[in-house]
Length: 329
Length: 128
Image 1 (cartoon, one colour):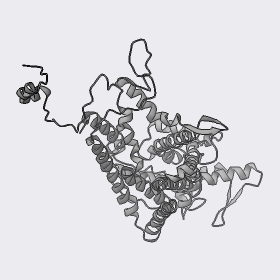
Image 2 (cartoon, one colour):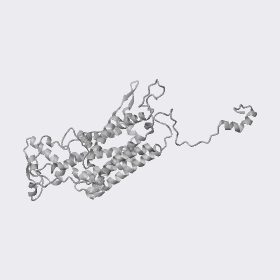
Image 3 (tube, one colour):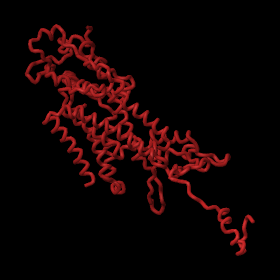
Image 4 (cartoon, one colour):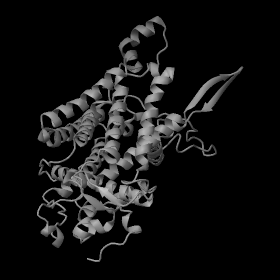
């Protein structure tokens, strides 16, 4: 049930495009208005989210650590697992962002007979890496539609991606990896009971959406071909802010474009915004220097205190009369 | 905002990167690659047509040629019957007969889209 609703939502989006483009002929709406609106929602939403996070105070100094803290000179500190300065934080953050190091360290706790065992379980890390990196390659490859003369690095990545030279047009390795990874990420949510229990419709929707984007792209490239020169003309019109409707592009392209627009518009308001959030995680971006630098809670306000000296001043005579020792006569 | 300087710097870099294609392309002309059909043979045609319809050729010419290659290599003859019933010889010469200049025709769109072609690794191209 948790999967059905997001699935139907994606199916509905596809049917919406078929109805809008094929039946009603709203090429301007689906080719120009929707992409522009999605881009605007994405950019403004992303800024809104990051600024909102920036305004959120961090009351406590909470870096997560799993290594020796810097202490006495003869104890070797672990500069990455327990960073004591900015350098360590930067290295740890880069490893987290590019290699998902915390996922890599995942262990599965299990009883093996009478022993408690901790087995390395890298499958989420592996599929996550496969998904994110192939997606990055796919996005870079698509930049050939965004520049009048295609930049050399984009050409190089495309060449690398199609290096198997299977078929015409050549198979992209990342297309296979992307769809396989998304499929695995979906399957783990419906087969592993613990993961299934904590899965929400908002976890399934992006997976179906991404699968829809990948599948429509694969269909468009390898089966239902479209006029790519027309597609590039449309995209160049959009990025040069002189949008024009280009005729003769198949409906499958508008499905692809609409699902991507949905992804972009959905991005800042969903779990997908972890792309920005990872940089703003206090457990990751703080160095463990709380014994060197005092972390002031931004919520703290000046508290009115009544010191012992003031207390003694107030009650000195009475204290003396009662025989209570005083510090100052 | 806490650590506003760092956050705004990071955000600016991100926004700058993601909108780069827009301010790189805005205000520049976007000329259509315009593959040239101005060759003697095409000019003599009364009804200008290719092996298949224009829409089909634009999207599928590479698969058509690939199909020709496979048919010929498999020894299944070299006559292609188009959807309109016309017969064509499955050969590059059929293409070059009309599209006599690779530079004026093929290369225009292929360069525009930065297509990495395997064709000319084996086949020779016309000199013009």
